[in-house]
Image (cartoon, rainbow, N blue to C red; front, top):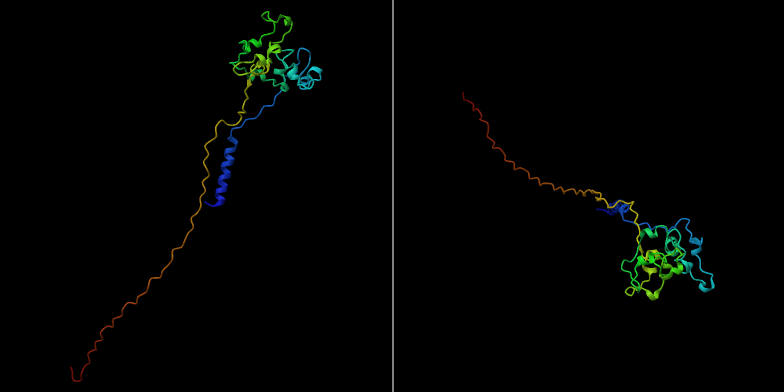
Length: 217
């Protein structure tokens, strides 16, 4: 096979295979549309740094991100800047093994403050317990060291899954390389002239013709 034939074969294989290679398209995060917290602040507010003397220069997501629940969201779950977004709660999974130092799981943190009479000072607040307790590192999970902010979706933690782009075929077709036919060089066989041997020539015997003698009748 010549170099030109090999190159054409390689190109043909690449062209056929490339469209079927698996690929994933990264999804762009989108804030929950038109969301604002209970005080009317939206995700743009939380994307900035605090200018409050007590929290000067700190991200507002960290200062107030688990506060002021509205429409089932805090900034931690609604705003991309805080690690949330429009699909965050749908794709998030809380750490099923998480327990803080008091044995409370993520389900406990999902409840509203004052729901059981505890912390009833805040019973007019619609926030979850994430607001008061989720970032308490002194009561983290004694096994993993995680706080509810790390482990629980409702507090802006947990783990999220990504969705792969499935528009490409699920499996590559069987590709048969094109057959390249090359003609074998034709070599003429040498021609050898056969020797010519002259046939022997034998002289025929010469017989004298009979001659009439005078007097013969």
